Length: 170
Image (cartoon, rainbow, N blue to C red; front, side):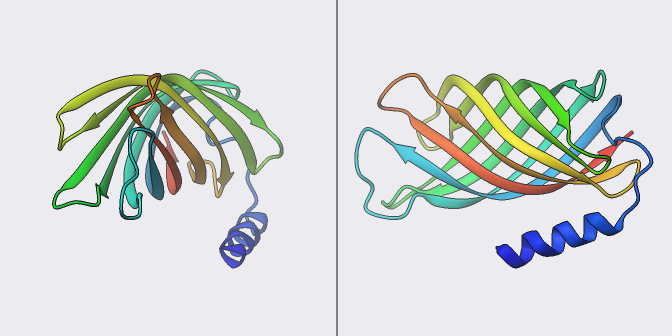
């Protein structure tokens, strides 16, 4: 992991960027990650980790504020004879802080919906995320995010996902 972060930093530091990728306008992000499914109601006999695939689209009003929607798919083995597929979706405010010409950190806050395909349950909770974007040029950047949904009751599954992706600004 340290080598990946070093190569990513080296790649981004070699790029000269004229303007912020998310200064204003629409953007899309494709994400691939690894997630953890927590369960407070019972102990699962196997591992709760799985890969995830997601997409985010949004509109940036300025370099500090954006509104975006996220959809993430995460298959998860529940430890028994069937698989539980999770779908996480959200509409969130994105609050960004540009630290330099090539890096901006951001915070996602908003409502989220978690759907479990094996039980057919839908639960609403708080969608929270923290991330950053390394700008490659005026339209393309590399996003690194840690996000998840936290549900209000004790018997629900909370999900946390670490993901890396590519952002394209229009």
